[in-house]
Length: 378
Ligand code: NAD
Image 1 (tube, rainbow, N blue to C red):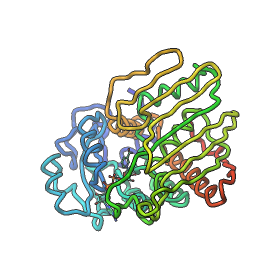
Image 2: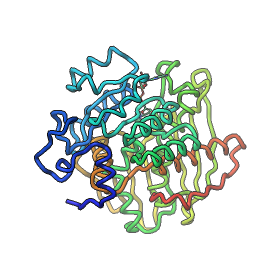
Image 3: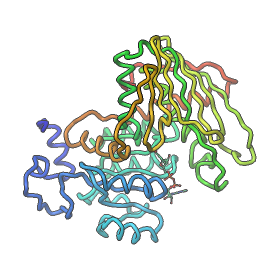
Image 4: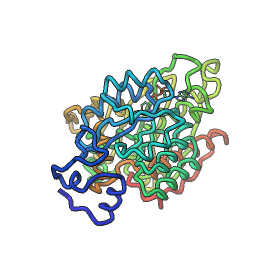
């Protein structure tokens, strides 16, 4: 087990975790302990929509270092359903109005914000203000300015921050990152990345409402094609040019339907990405000097599937990405392991999103990107 520095130890103690719990002792009977083992961090999900219901809560049954401790919901009818299903104590159930009193609840270590995109910044900042570590769903926010505000609030509160980039914890992603770093197929010259699906649902859903979503396909699936372009190449891009296409303006009244973009990288590589709410796409392919590697599907919930030019199939046992992701963040807090999806990564992607929208507004003009000093490992 990794030894704690005094700083890690004090910071974690500040979050109400007992020394004996951290050090694997048996005396877990602190005033706030629940029947859960306090070696695990308690997570409260904020927003009990489809992602929390069908992915995060079930994944929290598979995690080793964290567990579902609480919920925050604006829908009173959901409280009892979730309480009964997941055995959540009444004292760990909040609504959007009394949410800030979560500060007093030592059973909650991490607040996971799973609300419409325009609400991420407000709730992440309030969670930090309550002294809780924060996981903020993707896209991190709807502007770079909001990302900065979240990062600042977490720094000032001395809490850790992560973005819900589940693919960063996925073994297939790690494998392609390894190919790039070790030049298994030589230098990457060209990356192609698609992330989209056909949306025909409720025209009043928040994803089609610009005020709530901040944008369409690009804000939703586009962050995946930005991410795959970057890790499929192993570098942050130095420029982007983009185009927008619309075929169903009566449905996509306020938000983008399909966007394509081209990146240049300082390595000399280029990438093409496509994201859409009107076309299916779920693929990463990196063409290299001595071959290629490909993931398809590349960013759905799994199992992911991959192939390489030497005839190999990339294959790992399937595990819920969300369980791996939440455990990665819990280990970062408990043991000081790397934060695989820090706030700065969410901010980097929002800088790229804003540059893509700017390029479209300027008729496809190339936008230069200055991402060199962000300290983000692609
Ligand atoms: P959803 O529509 O199913 O749920 C949204 C939740 O927010 C609901 O519980 C709803 O009651 C609540 N809400 C509060 N105020 C609202 C308002 N003004 N309008 C609409 N809903 C409101 O959405 P979802 O699919 O669960 O997505 C939530 C967040 O999770 C989004 O940011 C999305 O991008 C992200 N997400 C991430 C992944 C991933 O793979 N990482 C997958 C799906 C969703």
